[in-house]
Image (cartoon, rainbow, N blue to C red; front, side, top):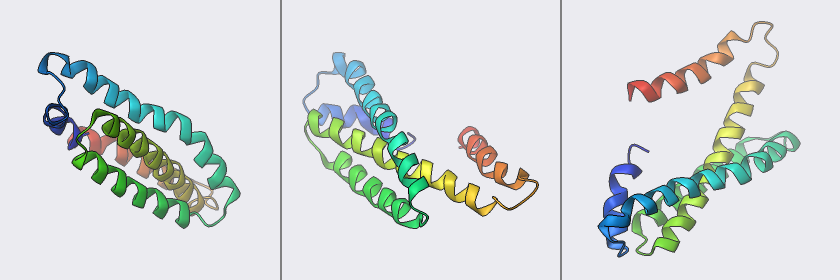
Length: 130
């Protein structure tokens, strides 16, 4: 969000969205990311559980995230912006779900899994410090 939010008004202006309606269209872009996450998170959970090699889905998600972000940055139509945001949500779901599964795998044999919580705590605190 730190990169996308400040750029959204300029991107919407380039798409021909009038300034008075920009809040509505920005909300639609935020919602489209959430839609992609909502739809694809369970799918990637199933994929992550069925495939023991988690690196493939993780790298695929990162590649898709890079591609969808590039499309978002250079698109000049609102429909393409929404499509890129949905794709960002889908690829973000892949990296989040598979990433947490990788952490769980790394600490699955430990009796005390407090070290696995460091990743979650660090993620939550980094948002506040960022």
